[in-house]
Length: 166
Length: 144
Image (tube, rainbow over all chains, first blue to last red; front, top):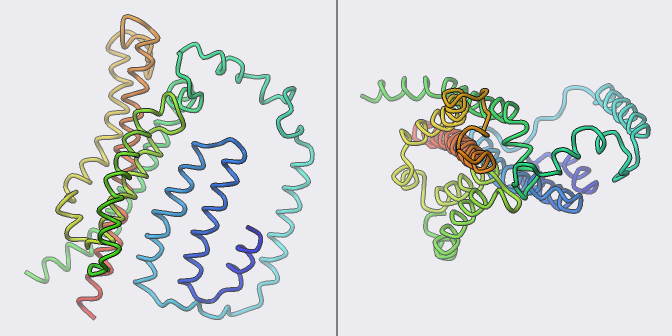
């Protein structure tokens, strides 16, 4: 994955970048499977590697396929992202160990979720659709808003063209 | 890519299974990995695959624009409707326990409809975005 990212950052050909980010998504999906998050892995493989690659190719079709040379050296962004990464790693050091049963996240509401009082074997689905129903409603609305925004942005142009053609 | 024989044959072979897998992920989401988001994206990916091989116009015949736009709104309304149904049956908003005389069964029913709503909206949005980008590209190619 690190290798993919390095090549991604160095490549100037945007077609290569799109393909590489698809590969990165697949690698990410395998990492998520290794973390036992199969639901997320499925989404990552379908959205990250599948649909978004196609959308990026579609967008690439509309513009030039070579990235322009940056106007200035990227030292400030590099320093900023390194600093953020260092801060995040420092913060992550304070977290409890991975899969530690005594971690607060496993002590708070998780036991109740796992008791499975609604008898749905897949806990992810139970939490997503039932215990956190409001959150998921919000997420669905966000997705809907994205679609509505796309329509609002791109439809007008299409309509204008259409009326011109008539 | 329309005239690539290998792609056409493989696509015809695979697409039914992709769509079937999406439906499986949708309805088996209670028991195995999966659920509305996953099923919606997989279904949309299947249609996008079809559009890539057989052309956008053919895909538009299979899943027309009007249907996609209707799906966008239907999903959210379905989800919100489950909440309202809970209200009408005397519970809280998005309270599934009241949807059936057996509370556990009510939960299952609520989750089923909610997941269906999520899947429909996600699939609709994915397809809509794809259609929008793809048709825009073609249009620009026609008018240089």
